[in-house]
Length: 82
Image 1 (spheres, rainbow, N blue to C red):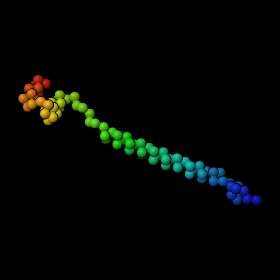
Image 2 (cartoon, rainbow, N blue to C red; image 1 turned 90 degrees about the vertical axis):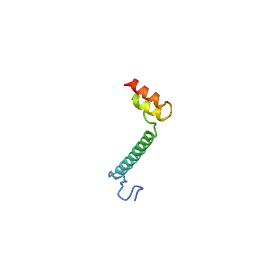
Image 3 (cartoon, rainbow, N blue to C red; image 1 turned 180 degrees about the horizontal axis):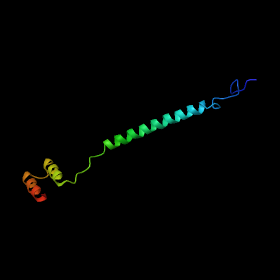
Image 4 (tube, one colour; image 1 turned 135 degrees about the horizontal axis):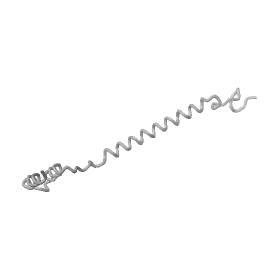
């Protein structure tokens, strides 16, 4: 009489093949999830605003470029910072 597991009474999990296939699929999904998370983190990091500088010379250059101070104020403040 033939049973539901096959002709010899063994199913796919009895010789380890099924467990290896399940382990392979688990590894595949774990790697895929890790790559997805790393991609999202990289995308978020790239879209973050640049760090503000604490260098007073750079701050004065930016303020001059933005028109917040005049050239005279810039040179006066540079001498003051030195």
